[in-house]
Structure formats: C-alpha cells, structure tokens
Image (cartoon, rainbow, N blue to C red):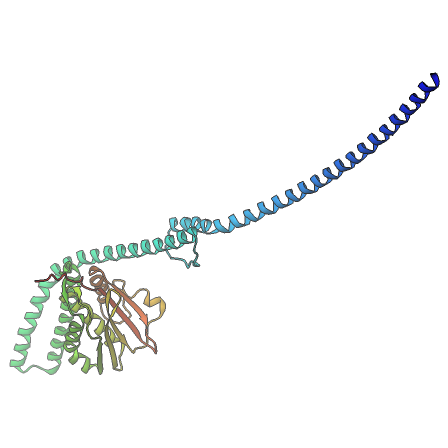
Length: 350
C-alpha cells in the first residue's frame, strides 16, 4: 500500500514538474510576445509622432503660403493708410485670398483716380473763381483800350503818321487781343456748364471739326487725315463741348508739329464706347511730362495758359468718358477720347 502511494506521489510530482515547465515555457513565450508587441507599439508611436510632426510642418507651410497674400494685403492697407495710392501688380490666383488682393488693388486704383479727379475739380473750381474775378476786373478796361486803339489807328491813318508809330499801335493792339483771349479762356473754365447730353454721330462731328480747322492747318503746313468706321453706334454727348475738346486736341497736335506733317484722326467703336484718336508725328512727350499734361497751368510751350488739355479732360469726364495720352508707334503722341455709346432704343410693333 505504501509502495503504491509512493508511486502515485512520484508520478504526481513528475506531472507537477512537467506542468511547471510547460507553464514557465508559456510564460516565457507570452513575455516575448509582449516585448515584441511593446517594441512594435513604440516603433508605431515613433512613426506616428514623426508623421504628425511632418503633417504639422506641411500644414504650417501650406497655411503660411495661403495666408501670404493676406499679409501682403495687410501691408498694402498700411501703406495706403500712409498715402501710397499707387496700384501694385498682383500675380493671378484662383483662390479667395488672391481674389481679395486683386480686388483690393482695384479699389486702391479707384481711390487714386477719385482723389486725382477731386484734386483736379478743386483746382478748376479755384481757377473758375479766379477767372470770374479776372474777367470782372480787366475785361471792361481791355475793351475800352481796344476801342481807343481802333480810334487811334484811324487818327494815325488820317494824319499820315510815321510807320514806327503805326507799328507800335499794332503791337499794342496785338497784346490787348492776347489778353482778351486769355481772359476768354479763363472765362470758359468759370462758365463750363454741365453737358446737355444728346444722341449723335461722333464721326460726323469729327468730320465737321476737321473741315473747320482746314485753313489754320494749311497755314501751319499740316494735313488732317480722317478715318472713321462705317455703321458706328451713336454716342451721348454735348455737341458744343465735345467740339471744343476735339478742337483743343487738333490744335495741340498742330503745335506739336512745328515743321508740319500729317495728323491722323480716327473714330471707331470699341466695346460699349466710341473712341476718337488724334495722333501727331511730333517729337513726342517724355513719361514724366505725359503724367502732367492734363494738370491745370502745366504747359511745355513758351506761351499759353496750360488750361486747354485740363479743360478737355474736364469735358470728357463730365460726359462719363475717359481721355488718355500715349506715345505713338513711330514717334509722336496719341490722344484718345472714349465716349459711352447711346443706349439702344426700344422699338414696339405698330
């Protein structure tokens, strides 16, 4: 009996040892697997951290790139606030910030244009007040002087006065006439009314103005070549004022061509406008002078008030149009007046 129990105990002990070995082996395997999973987890976490940093860096760069136009807009807004109203070139972009930048620069250009027009209007208003005063103060005395000069000329002619005295009277009369013309030009600034807009044929008006100036152009050795498109749409304008504007441009072109030559006048439709171009073949105008040709009192001539082009610009802008001064291909200068076309009339069936 004891022998049997000993055998059973021995067998049980062997089984316990075998079981302990198997449990130990299993524990070692589980520990190794746990260590491997831990290493993979650490490796995965490392990769995830690196990926997260990379994504964050990429997002940061992308956000900075996207927000760069906004920073530029902010800088431009500060510059505009300091008085810099010169529009900047903007690279085209399809996103909202690019559109914002382009719109902002368009706004700056519009503000600059409005400010320039306001300054021009203020200057011309001051000129108008001065013109009214000058006209009141000197026009009547000039008329009296002119009348007395005519009487004096008649007296000298009857008395057979010396040629020198007659020449002096003629010179005085010429200067009186120049002063009268000067006062008339100032008076035109003071009395320039709002345009009375009517529908009309710009090409026919240009042809009439060219015919009117033919004699003075011939005396200056100039020829005016007019070219107008057929079936031009009518424009809305005040005939007297646009006539004056075209006369100013033609005479300006004539004065730019001291040696004579051909002045080209063209009338054509462009979009919703009718454009009249007057091109001379003179020596041209430098960029710095071209930027000031429409300023009141600015003139490159020895004589003149410098109001002709300023008045022309005022007339054109009062019509809702524009006027430009550009260099002409081949030398010379081109002035272009743009007038809006007349609205189409509605026709009903009868």
